[in-house]
Image 1: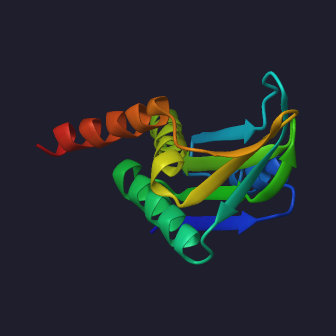
Image 2: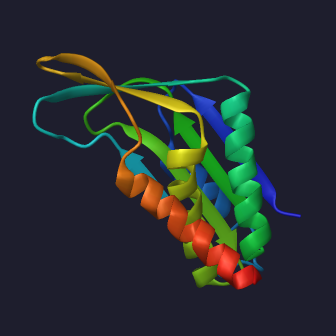
Length: 157
């Protein structure tokens, strides 16, 4: 059974330490993949703020990681998500997977990041030079999640 690690925290994410947990940890894994998301500079953006529903958010992220682990026979899956206020360039999320083969690790990592954008209860507020406002999930996020839902459904058929 895969080892699943899910963390939601207001503290900075130590991506290197998390990746080091996977790399070299299991000689049966030839593939370790990761994704790091950070606050990108956009016109007028000063900071980003994320809120979550404690307990419910962690459960949702665990379901996503477990689904990936089952689908791609992962040995480990990590999702570490930040909440609170984050400045430009700060890390928001780190997702990683280890598997016997690279394609499984890469696909599982892509799946986890795409699914958490729509299936985990986070609320995003952007702070700009003109003020602050809450934002909804983007159509591109929903399309990315739908890709995996459709792909996995067609494989099961």
